[in-house]
Image (cartoon, rainbow, N blue to C red; front, top):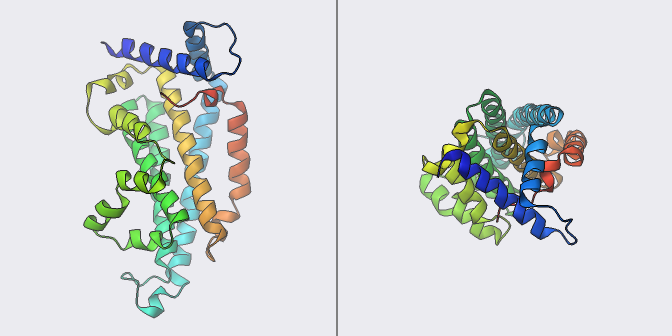
Length: 262
């Protein structure tokens, strides 16, 4: 099956699944719903809004990450107690800083690559954003996972922080099938990734919208961490701004009405 045909089939599956999720569906054909998806994905105003939100989020992630790095190095008891291999005051705070700065570069680079038409490369970075989300969840919900991650060697990361391990620990919060979609589209060089080489605007905007969804959830997890941390101020003082930006996007982007792929 050629890449264009694969994408048409994918849009039809999205459309059919969306119709099946409605309580009282209107009498619309799958083709009609597919066309609505295409229209929503190519709306110029929403395209600008998606990119603007991605770049604004990347800047905020970077700024917060830099502030937390300074706080984590100076403030905390880890250095005094001799438990930080790096001489930081708080390895947990520095771990959040590192995760935010990694996220910042992935978000901005993925958005830029989608805009430039290098969609396969953008999708590969999007899969890494998904992994950042897993780690943000772990840092928020599991005690001392931030410092454990920062101090880990490769064997420890494979044992405790590999994507599969974190999905298992999350007990259904993250679907392995969703991660598999990202692996097929941008994680590995497989034939189905050919759909990204056609520069179809509907595919690009669907993935960019997906990127923003992961970014919002990363931020929410780290807000949760900040609320219980003495070093959380750099995140909390920007939480209202981020909430406003994402609320406006969610209220206006019709692509968010789509259910996850079946």
